[in-house]
Length: 159
Image (tube, rainbow, N blue to C red):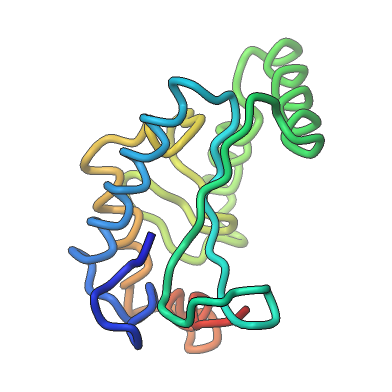
């Protein structure tokens, strides 16, 4: 899937509405393929170093009828934690980071950034509300990040 009609525009250079359109399309793809496949992964494949033959900014989709090993391990760990504590691990982590405010770079109503963490239990992109999709990338446009941590800098094109 190409992100933009212009071949020199990548996600970090796109406007919020353009990024939102990409997120909406990713959500549609995940929803469609998720009806048939157990695992759907969308990833950017950029640069010759990564085997990219198309210089136009784009992503690829990988879908399979099984969970990859790493995803199986993460799923089991998260399920075990939930069984033991009655709350999703990452949601509890988000609450702790929000209270301590030691490593929080930025936050809004729906997201907290140490890692980029949703403020509610979300399994996949298709679970995001319209407002959450908007605010996910609004958080990337925040001007008060230190220059070295500007999300647009972190999203700068790399392979």
